[in-house]
Image 1 (tube, protein in one colour):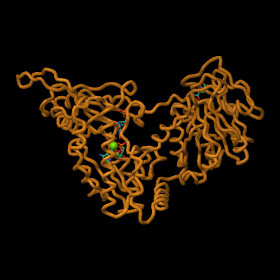
Image 2 (cartoon, protein in one colour; image 1 turned 120 degrees about the vertical axis):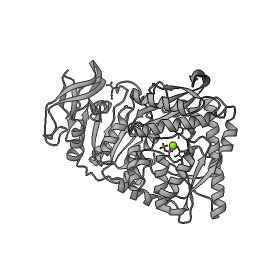
Image 3 (tube, protein in one colour; image 1 turned 180 degrees about the vertical axis):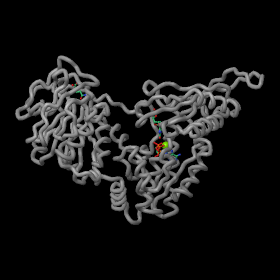
Image 4 (cartoon, helix red, strand yellow; image 1 turned 90 degrees about the vertical axis):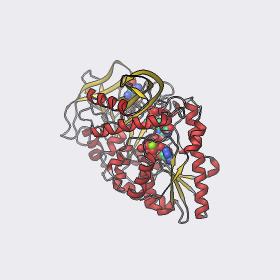
Length: 538
Ligand SMILES: Nc1ncnc2c1ncn2[C@@H]1O[C@H](COP(=O)(O)OP(=O)(O)OP(=O)(O)O)[C@@H](O)[C@H]1O
Ligand SMILES: O=c1[nH]c(=O)c2[nH+]cn([C@@H]3O[C@H](COP(=O)(O)O)[C@@H](O)[C@H]3O)c2[nH]1
Ligand SMILES: NC(=O)CC[C@H](N)C(=O)O
Ligand SMILES: [Mg+2]
């Protein structure tokens, strides 16, 4: 991963990822302390680590066993490097086991495995140690998830906490600046976890807080100004979603009207979405946007296509065609070919696209081909500007606030590029399915807003089912469509649970839909989590 200037500032906490399901959480917890933290693959080269110039390095947990062949490890020369630079190293779970093994101790399969809630007792409370702060309780409830155990510590290390089963829970070698926690301080179930991390980073490592979104903004603007020449033009595909809007607003601040945004109406948008989005961009966000009506292009190519992946590929390709044409239009207008393309890529996208070896972590990209502007044709020769590449969604929302984007916009649920096409199984152009779905979706979302639960839900939408069932409406037999409602809670869309509506709400919505949308006589609720389902239906 290309280090950005933010990371070059001193006080960087670098996390080496060995595949723990909690690695993101460590990063987020540390950032919540206003400390800049970033994660890279645990087997990255020493040069990559040196380039980032970290003050502290955290080795994450992971599914492997350090004593098994091929277990991932930090690069050769790592120990010498951290010791020569006085860098503090904290190993968490697998990370602790790595430290123990690589410095001459022994890690074996434990007699008893420890999974879940566990009590530990802090034995030694010295100044400069992991627990050397009176605010941290001696008896703690922590979250464990391990089967291996450190049975012999390297020379100079001592045990500073043990589990109620007697296993090693925390170790340190203050002189050499190596520390280890066998449990996960980053999960909320570990009652003193956050206090321990805070104490470790501020008191033990001497880091100073000061990483603020205002600084990120200022720096990104500086970087973009430095990258884009004074005569260069830049294009940005704007979806009306949070990520591309924040990215566009930021780049616009840096280069003004040399930024050319395009919003594509692909005929797969929601009810009045085009009008709403354009109105928002022009009147409230003051962003120069060109709206391209490509309804005909998209829908004609989708006609008769029922296979989900095929639909996605057609849509992805058509987007690219439109962006390509737009770049040519800009060239005609300003007399210069645009050199850069702005994308709203977020940090989880970056981490997920380069998972550590053997982590078993998969990305939904392998399940469906998400539409992505990254697949632009090579001959466009556009270079990328990805100002949000190191941020999580909640941080992007914070940045959006600083950029004067209204909060209700920033809380918008995500909406996928392929739009309603992935919410109509089968041929999207058959009958008036798009029209029916728009009406149902609008009623559902409006009801959610009226019930003031929009912000509790990560994403909500309706699905049109290409199935007709028999109903009775106004004493008449109907043979109409069924629709499904889907609402989920999630952190990042990688996993999700269905949202528990109350029955009264569901009853009202179902009635409203059947009473006002012609062609629908049955409403279903999707009660599957992800996995086993995905959020979208296709
Ligand atoms: N209708 C559209 N017109 C132009 N670009 C689009 C359109 N739909 C999607 N895109 C492009 O595809 C990218 C990926 O879409 P994605 O939905 O992941 O992000 P977003 O729309 O910016 O934010 P959010 O996740 O909040 O919806 C967008 O950032 C944008 O560049
Ligand atoms: O821009 C996008 N282009 C796509 O092709 C795409 N497919 C799914 N999504 C969104 O990603 C999240 C996870 O969706 P799934 O569980 O259906 O994979 C959910 O938020 C989906 O809405 C997409 N976003
Ligand atoms: N959560 C972890 O890091 C586990 C480490 C190692 N795989 C164990 O079972 O002990
Ligand atoms: Mg979107």
